[in-house]
Structures are given as structure tokens and as C-alpha cells.
Image (cartoon, rainbow, N blue to C red; front, side, top):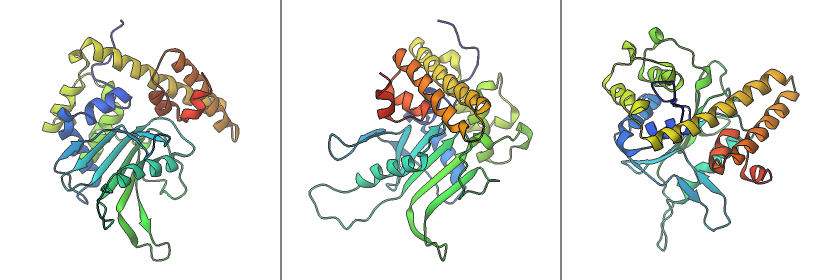
Length: 290
């Protein structure tokens, strides 16, 4: 098998993201990242990882598979997702995903007063969401239920945080906060050949140690190569569609490219959940390609 050329993994790949943020041995990295994102508004001291695969109340219900799913020390739930491909109904998807940690809080076989713990959905987007409700000059968007007349928060236990990391373009010497440093690492870690002085904090010692490809087992290396190939395929297809598509034809072109890539990934035996993640297609759309 051909060795990868990078020294550090690409955190935008499915394998890279879950290795750094979705494993118990690296939970300190997830905690640091979440705290940088909340910037004091919510302080995460500890997390416990939960089963990222969920089905509904009956067998025929839809399934949800989270990249990272964990619980804070006060019972709050965190869903953390990396999304590389544009999806027409992504807002619907993130709302749908939030229903699983809400419903699972209902106790079975006993009385319940309907009190819920907080649910946070964090979506890291490697594309511009182009959402009319968002400030186009900002990268991070915080969404809660509010009264449309007073703009006051109506319900503070359900929060969605969308981070358009594709818009982040700060250089190393422009990094000021932990949040800046994490977004830089997410977008650029795989391009680095050595540790920059701007990322020499203790927590980043752990990041660079966990992300060094030379320490992978042969199985881990195979999984990373497959994940990197899937990431490159869908990103190349999207870039090509953007170049070839004009005006209203752009979205159609992107959808066709996504279908083409999904066919190739199916032929290569790639898991359908990974195909859904990278293509933005639904399970029904992918099943029709078989």
C-alpha cells in the first residue's frame, strides 16, 4: 500500500475527525475545542462518550449516526458533526438529529415531569451555508428558539451552532484565541510538516501526537487512506460542479456529481453511512444506485 505523504492527518476526513474528537483517549481535545467554541457562555469540564448510532422508537424509524455524541457532567448532550458536502435540507437534518437526544431523556415506565437537559448540536461546515438568516460576515452562527417580536430567547435548552470553517482564512500570525487556533488546525493540520510556534500550547502537544500518521497501525493507515480518498472524491466533484455549473444549473451539476461519486464508492464497497456523509445524498437515493 502506498504511504501517505502528509505527516499529520486531515481533520476534515471522517477518520481524522473521529480519531481526534470522537475517542475517549482524546476527550481533552474535544473539551478544549467545545470550550473555545462556547467562549465562556458554557463551560465543559468533562464528557462521557455515548453510542453515536441511534434508531427511532420502532424498527422502521429513521436512523441517525453522529460523528461525535457525548454527555457533559450535568447531563447536557453534545452532537458534533463535520459536514463536507452541501446538502439541500441540512437544516432539517440537524433538527432531526437533535430529536434523538431529546427523546431518549424520557424515562421508561415511570412518571415524568418533562424536564429536559440541554441539547447542543455543533455543525462544522466545510462549505458556505448561504443561509439568509445568518450574518454573511461571520463564521460562527448561534441559533435558538426565540420570540419573533421581542427577539428574546423562548427556550434556552436547545441550541444549534453552525461554523462555516470554509470561510476561515486567518494566517498563523493572526491567530489570537483558542477558537482561532482550533479552526486553523481543522483546516490546515494536514498541510503542516512541523509544529508552528503559534500551536505550542500543552493541549496542542496532544493534538500533534494523536495526529501523527507515522504512529498509525497498518489497519489505521488503511482506514485513513480510504477516508481520505472519499473526502477527496467528493470535494473534487463539488469543485468541478462549481466550475462547470452556471446560475441555476450549478445545483443540478453538483447533485449529478454527487450521484457519480456515490456510484463509485458503492462499487468500491464503501459503507453507505460514509457515502451519505460525503455525498449529502439520502439513503434512499443511494439505494437506488445499486
